[in-house]
Every structure is written in structure tokens, then in C-alpha cells.
Length: 179
Image (cartoon, helix red, strand yellow):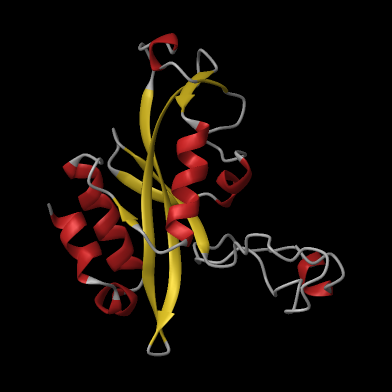
């Protein structure tokens, strides 16, 4: 984040479900300090609550600070999370790209996780989350491992957010979410 840019210092008064989190490129192509860093301008974390069959954006997930993740200690073994009260989620990394000067959903990857708020325990594979965010940024579509109902919720959310972007997206995304 460019701390010298006054636009970044303004507080956002209205909650937004837009697919952008940072403004401006702090390197501006100069190749000095900050060059080679990931630009997260076009990636958005989207949660799918498997039990409730609903999708919602929580920008805190970029730093593992989403409402789903707060006050939960994550373990790498799913069997360590008590099943009574456990909720399954998909954290989907959605990347927006541009082709023919039109925005489209260029990268979509899903990561499985479980959370038991009452036990303050959850399961997620941190390397999987990081690698899938990277793959999303690189324009990959990885949704085959998601359950059919969650893929439908994701497709409906993406269409509802912006049908033009959905229509302009690659057939690989449409096919992957319609299986």
C-alpha cells in the first residue's frame, strides 16, 4: 500500500463488495524499492459458507484477518478440530483481468477450510492458500476439487456481481463451475 498517497488514508464509510483492495502501483515502473512485489489490486477473497450455501467477500482474508478466521487457531490436521459446531468454508481467490479492454474473471481458485468458533480451532493448509492465491493471480482456474453445490453458489455470485464480466470470462471458468 502506498502510504504517501492521501487517497489511501481516507476511511471507507460504506461497506463494499467491489473486487479491488489497493489503489495505485507504488513502484510506478521504476524498478527500485518494492519492485518484484505482488500487486493485489485485482484479487479478492470470497468465502463460501458450505452449510448456508451463501457467498460473501471479506477483504481481511488477504492477511488471515477475516471474520471467519478471527479468534481461531488454525491447525494443519483436520482431525484436531472438534466436529461438534464445525463449519466448512471455501476461500475462493477471485482475480479480475482485462482482455479486449473489458474486465473478466481471469483467475479463480478455491481453498478448503473448517472453523469451529466455539472451540476456537480451525483447519486450513496455509501453503495451499498461498499457492492458490498465486495461481489465481496468474490466471488459473482451479475449482474441480470443490463440491458441486459450492461451485453453483460461486457461479451465481459471480454472475450476480457482474454478468458482463461473467459473459466475457473464458469458457474454462463456465465449464469448471457447471460440472
